[in-house]
Every structure is written in structure tokens, then in C-alpha cells.
Length: 420
Image (cartoon, rainbow, N blue to C red; front, side, top):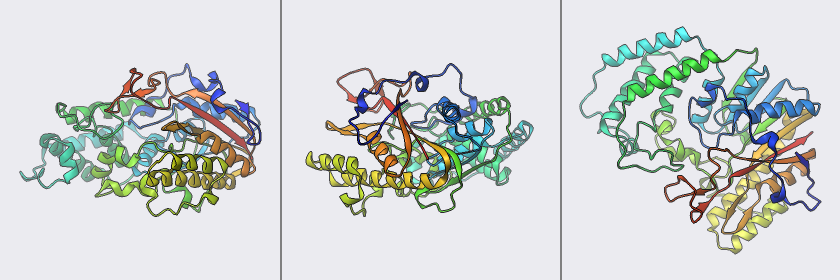
């Protein structure tokens, strides 16, 4: 980690890969892998941030992640004995995060599973069940797979009372939805594979359930309190005081998370139309339709980037999305300042992107925002996103590719810290 100041000339691209943040010899807990999640950073970033903050003199009791996603920081905080408060606007994300950070009795899990299997055997539904399905689910599923999934979810809701065990089973159910659908395997965007074969739905669920049991058995429970809310951080008023914030905001011009989680959102009843979940998401083009873009609201970096994008002819809807992202991030950092106790620290994991040769410097923008909000001792490091997925090109289907003629995407990201 090297010091950086906005007022000084600083070459962000010249920041070297920091081996401390790039890899770990320790394997992740199984619980971190119970449900796939896009752009999830590895668990070692969280516990290395704990170590770094402690070495810098931060006394950690309370940890937060304001864009908590699937709960990587939440779980690591729990097993390290820190109280945690986190939030995310995506209900699928917070379902996964709560499931990962709760404690369970294996015998009770198996008891509910036996009840579910018995319930499924005795269920009888009308022949037109598939024809009555949500049109979007008909689009994604063959009839047989849909009907088995329907019975499975119906049994979960009938046999498990509301609470952490039902959420755990719904999370496991959610984790198999793409594999059981026509969704193109490993694609980063919603795309049908017309040649994809149906798989054994109940067999897939059984496999994931027993993986979850192994994950539960692996964790040594620490005495820590965990709170995870499904809410927009920018609208949340009841924020706790914490010593350390570790977070990775969505990248500007990046994924539409509502689209990527549409199967779970529809099956679990979070929305009748998954597109309604796009609104409110930071950096979403769908969150900017009515956004009045006033350059005076942007800091110097944000203003400069938006002006360049306008000059090269980026559609105004997308320019407004970039501007909205930067305004939202400026407000988020200001709220982080209000959450931290004196001497506290914040960590942001963020990457730079590019649009038609215009550098979209999220790292520079964030450093400038931290300095404006009176954070000091601002430092920056760089890491390779993952050895497994660091190939920086993607083909027309969204899959990673080694072909240099294909679209290049970011494969490095920055770790940026600041003190209060």
C-alpha cells in the first residue's frame, strides 16, 4: 500500500501489484462457496484488511460492509469474533449473506430435509402447471425441470416455518436454479443455451444441501452479533458506529445485478418482474432515467470523465448513469465518514474500466472523494482479480477468452484505504 494525495501527480496505472493483497495460501471456508455470486472478492481480502487495520492501530470491535453482496465480509467478521452490520439493495444477495452468517444445527437441517422429501412424494398438481407459470420462467425452463422445482419450493415453504432454516433451504434452492435452467453455463450475462440438457433437479439439490451441511460443520462459532439488511445504503438512516468498513461497490458500466439474479428473484417472490429490482441500484442505467445531471455535483475527476464520454458520443442515458454512479459514491463516502468512530478505517475494493479509449478512473474519483471528506493517511494498492479468471478478454457470449481480438475487460482492481 502506497500513500496517495489528490493534489500530487500520481500515476494510478503505475501502481505495482501488491503481493499482500494478491493471493493467500489459506483455502476458503466451504460456506463462502455455497452460492455463486458475480464479482465476489476472495475471503482473504477481508481478514487481511483486519490484520492491516490492527497493525495500523485500529481497535476493531465492529465491522461493516455497506455493499455487502453475498456476505464475504460478514462471515469473516463472524468467525473472527467481530460484530457486523451490513446491507445490500439486492434481496438475493442479502438472502445468501444471512444464510452464510447464521448458525445451524445439522440434525435440524436433516429433519427438515426428510419432511420436504416426504411432502414432494405426496404432492399432486394440475397438468397445466407449466402453462400457468410466469412467462419469464417458461422462457428459462423446460417443463419437467420447472414442475420439479415448483414442487421443491412449495415443499420448502410448507414444511419449514419462517426463519433462518427456511432461508437456508431457499438459499440452497436458489443456488441450483441456473444449473437447472437453460442459462448458458459460465456466461456473465443472461443467455439461453439451446443445446443444454436437463439435469436431475432433486439430485442437484441433494448435492448442494450436503455441501451446506459440510460448511456448517466446518465453522467454529464465535461470539459475535451479525445484522444484515436488505436496503439502499444511501437511504438508510439508522446506521451504527463501527471501527472498520470493508466494501466493494458495484463498478460503473458493469453488471446489472437484477438481471443476473432474475431466476432467484422470480422463484422466491421478490418481484413479479425482475426488472423492477434494477431501480435504485448504484451505477445502474435504469436508475438514471429521471436523473438531472448537474456537473456541479461531481468532483473534478467525475466531471472530467463525464465530459470525455459526452465528447466521444456515449449515449446520454449511459453518461447519466456514470454521473449518477459518481454522485452516489460521493454520498456513500460521506455516510461512511459519519459511521466511523475516531481512528476508524475504511477499505474500498474497486476497479477502473474503459469505454472507447476513455479511462473511467473509479480509483482516482474515490481517492478524491475520501480526501474531500477529510479522510487522511489515504493509501492504495493493486491486485489481480483472480488467478482463475484473470484472462482479460471475453467473447461474444460473455465467456472468458484468451483471444486478444476479443473485448478486453478489467482484470485488476485497487485496494484503497483511509483513516478518520
